[in-house]
Image 1 (cartoon, helix red, strand yellow):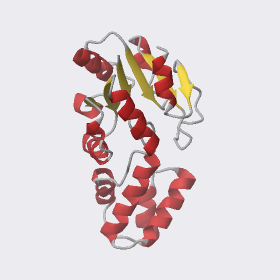
Image 2 (cartoon, rainbow, N blue to C red; image 1 turned 180 degrees about the vertical axis):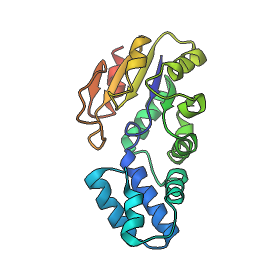
Image 3 (cartoon, one colour; image 1 turned 90 degrees about the horizontal axis):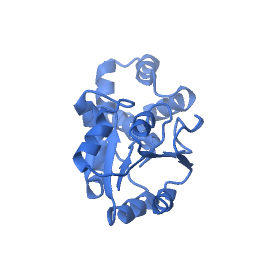
Length: 207
């Protein structure tokens, strides 16, 4: 069996990356007061136009492109929580582990490194390097070609894109309904839905 994880809002809460990115921007601009503004705007409207608003609000002379670059490519202060570490440690003893994640390659690779996932994940797939993204089947087939196993399980959080391809490939799918995730209110379309990532181990025991 191969268990394949999504990254953002599955193995860690993506909101922690957002906080880390805002702090990095503040450090670059040498003013921590900007954090409260960005955080407030993020909670109200999401991350869409935050840096545009920051530049306008404080009459900054820095370019939007530079702020986006700082945010996107910083090495984040993020961590696996204790329960996720326990789960991955347990699974690694008896199951092969992989990862499929969308997003800019450098951003996602930095997250992977910051979380120490190289200790657990045998085969990470950054879809950006394959010039594709979910729900395309290509990254999932890339994983199956690597392992040549007969049973795959995909654990992810986003019903809008995560489960279409693996279900077509007859993978078993687990939706983690992350209470802090932005897709938490979207109806489940995976085989099973859980609200605690630790439940993965119990489900796998029954497969």
